[in-house]
Image (cartoon, rainbow, N blue to C red; front, side, top):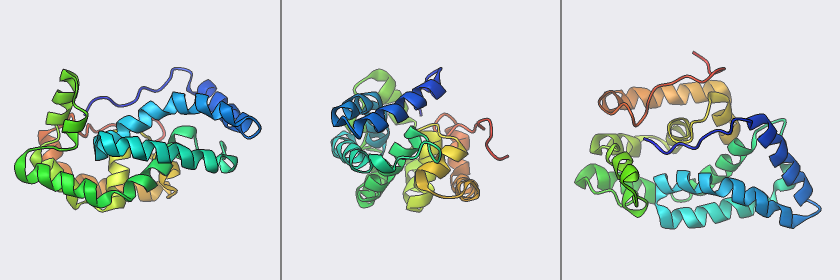
Length: 207
């Protein structure tokens, strides 16, 4: 699917700036608002594609409230800001697992996508939503929560293996195992709908 977040050209500089903002917000909490404005749209887009716009509003708000509460524990040496935030969001999404699976099963059974209908305002969005076929929705619904998190961070958030490992706090080897397992289950579908889960390898990803 399209609408994956774009990586800034000076990603290292942005990451340093983000870390500085988080550190500064410990003494000046209002500085966290800049951090929120910078990253909330990407978190909201990702969550909306999984749970719908209404739930995305709540999950995004809770993600950043949680990030604000635990910002003192942020360690730039251990994880980047994007994996840190998506990891927090993943825990919030897990609380809506039943709703996510229910929506996927509705799409698989009827062809009507209650999640996509909540965010498909533009023609581009409608084309992207149509790429999530009924067979793919059925396959996604049958994945474990961990496999689904891993697969969709890779496919929709454009994360590397290392970033997924950081976000979910799991070894890179587990990321590889989960992706391989999910791909086996979805292979027949993804071969027919390549743009949805386009195979790719980032620099540094295991073969």
